[in-house]
Image (tube, rainbow, N blue to C red; front, side):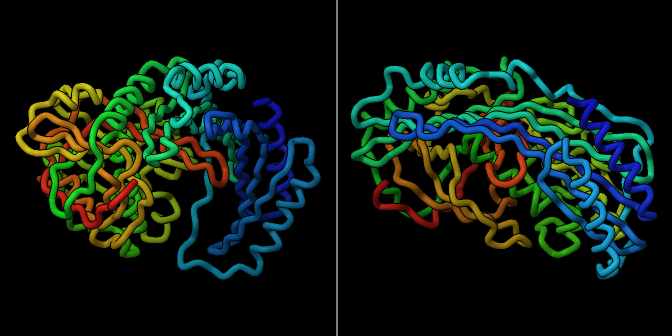
Length: 461
């Protein structure tokens, strides 16, 4: 299949060369599979195979793109897409800068992120995994739901400025399992990300659900008073917070447009906790990485924050062209964000429950309905959901109703950070909308931040 894809791209490039314009051809193919569970049954088992092509024509500072969904046998139809992009660029408004067109000095073929065993897993195997996690946990009032999303992603590109192609193929799986009480309306959840079949671990998911179920079924529920709390964030919450930080903190183009809480004068300054280090690391295979970006630049470890000190912005090629900056090999569908672990050996909920503490600790594993309130101040908002716990200082545990946080990322990752757990796990942040783009962020299992304010507190689940 790879050879056929590259041959089609080469044929399209030959056709584009006769147009007399600089043209880039971008290919995206996904083979996606989804099993959805609801009410302790399979509610959907489907798959789709899609091929997308995008043609971008350049004429000086003018640029126009045309996209289509097609198949590899429709070469004549694809050529019409090139014709359309060339027709459109004539009427495009000139940009204030001249965009760079990719020039690949050599072929780049990377299939290191593809695992045939994961990609070939049958529906029966996936169902067996789900059943191993929930076996014996379901009852007439405790129902399971969730998703198993898996697929193969193939990206390729070529331009009229060089004959060499760029080609990346990956495999991925995202698993989410929820147990919900029909009467009391609470839910607990466990998730897992996989780039290889060997990453799958049903035992770990089951242990997490068993711990949460024990306390949700046995411990009292309560509405938390508004105020400030010492909060322990779980891996899902940490990853989602970092996702927003990548967007409104580290993105050079958005900084220039006024949508970042970090500024150019912040370079080299301490802006966060000394416990906090985060970087883009394309060597972490569990992040579905790109070792070269879409302009052929080799991607290497790129620090954003080291021990609290801001180290710099990332620049996608188009933003660099517009603002006269130097591109940093970040023109990719997603980064490979990795947050460094700390020194506290707490890696499971059981270990967290036994951690000595002289104040109440509010555990928030997930943040739901997240959004940006004020990008220039780094303020985001989100509510707790799925498995929050209150570890009281007397050693007991209570089940808090959902609460809402509205805080600055500078405060969440600031000097209030008490400790960060050792180790790191890949939390899958993939979206199910648009073209498949498997994404995960490596984060520590837990992080405690002191004195964060709860702005809203629900009276029920």
